[in-house]
Length: 80
Image (cartoon, rainbow, N blue to C red; front, side, top):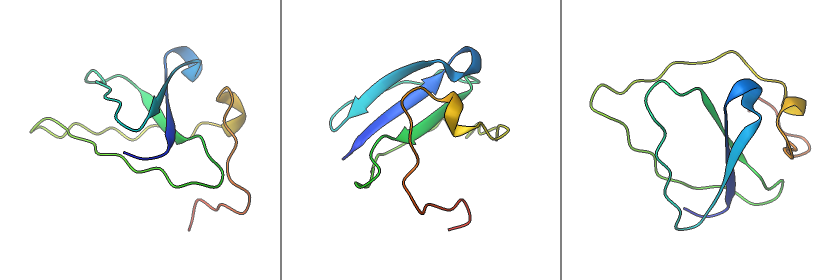
Protein backbone atom coordinates (compact mmCIF):
# COMPACT_ATOMS: atom_id res chain seq x y z
CA UNK A 1 0.00 0.00 0.00
CA UNK A 2 1.07 3.53 -0.62
CA UNK A 3 -0.66 6.77 0.24
CA UNK A 4 -2.88 7.73 3.15
CA UNK A 5 -6.35 6.28 3.56
CA UNK A 6 -9.18 6.60 5.99
CA UNK A 7 -11.77 3.88 6.63
CA UNK A 8 -15.08 5.38 7.79
CA UNK A 9 -17.64 3.27 9.65
CA UNK A 10 -20.19 3.44 12.48
CA UNK A 11 -23.33 5.52 12.82
CA UNK A 12 -23.44 8.01 9.94
CA UNK A 13 -19.80 7.07 9.21
CA UNK A 14 -18.58 9.29 12.05
CA UNK A 15 -15.91 6.85 13.25
CA UNK A 16 -12.75 6.26 11.27
CA UNK A 17 -9.31 4.66 11.25
CA UNK A 18 -6.27 6.24 9.56
CA UNK A 19 -4.18 3.91 7.39
CA UNK A 20 -0.79 4.33 5.74
CA UNK A 21 1.83 2.16 4.04
CA UNK A 22 2.34 -1.14 5.87
CA UNK A 23 -0.91 -1.03 7.87
CA UNK A 24 -3.41 -3.90 8.07
CA UNK A 25 -7.12 -3.58 8.78
CA UNK A 26 -9.71 -6.30 9.30
CA UNK A 27 -13.27 -5.28 8.42
CA UNK A 28 -15.83 -7.67 9.93
CA UNK A 29 -18.44 -9.15 7.57
CA UNK A 30 -21.48 -6.95 6.99
CA UNK A 31 -19.88 -3.84 8.57
CA UNK A 32 -20.94 -0.87 6.41
CA UNK A 33 -17.79 1.13 5.67
CA UNK A 34 -16.29 3.60 3.20
CA UNK A 35 -12.69 3.77 2.04
CA UNK A 36 -11.25 7.19 1.20
CA UNK A 37 -8.00 8.51 -0.24
CA UNK A 38 -7.04 11.35 2.09
CA UNK A 39 -4.81 13.09 -0.46
CA UNK A 40 -6.06 15.33 -3.23
CA UNK A 41 -2.74 14.96 -5.11
CA UNK A 42 -1.32 11.45 -4.42
CA UNK A 43 -2.70 8.09 -5.51
CA UNK A 44 -3.75 5.47 -2.98
CA UNK A 45 -2.82 1.83 -3.57
CA UNK A 46 -3.89 -1.05 -1.35
CA UNK A 47 -4.56 -4.75 -1.43
CA UNK A 48 -7.97 -6.08 -0.41
CA UNK A 49 -8.73 -9.74 0.33
CA UNK A 50 -12.17 -11.23 0.83
CA UNK A 51 -13.58 -14.52 1.99
CA UNK A 52 -14.44 -17.15 -0.61
CA UNK A 53 -18.08 -16.02 -0.39
CA UNK A 54 -16.90 -12.59 -1.66
CA UNK A 55 -19.55 -10.68 0.30
CA UNK A 56 -20.02 -7.24 -1.27
CA UNK A 57 -23.09 -5.09 -0.70
CA UNK A 58 -23.20 -1.75 -2.47
CA UNK A 59 -24.43 1.01 -0.18
CA UNK A 60 -26.26 4.23 -1.04
CA UNK A 61 -24.01 7.20 -1.84
CA UNK A 62 -22.87 9.26 1.14
CA UNK A 63 -22.40 13.03 0.85
CA UNK A 64 -18.70 13.94 1.12
CA UNK A 65 -19.55 16.64 3.67
CA UNK A 66 -20.69 13.94 6.08
CA UNK A 67 -17.18 12.44 6.24
CA UNK A 68 -14.99 14.18 8.84
CA UNK A 69 -11.84 15.64 7.29
CA UNK A 70 -12.50 14.36 3.76
CA UNK A 71 -12.01 16.56 0.70
CA UNK A 72 -12.47 15.24 -2.86
CA UNK A 73 -9.74 16.25 -5.32
CA UNK A 74 -10.68 19.20 -7.53
CA UNK A 75 -11.87 18.17 -10.96
CA UNK A 76 -12.68 14.61 -9.86
CA UNK A 77 -15.76 13.13 -11.45
CA UNK A 78 -17.61 10.02 -10.34
CA UNK A 79 -17.95 9.12 -14.02
CA UNK A 80 -14.26 9.23 -14.75
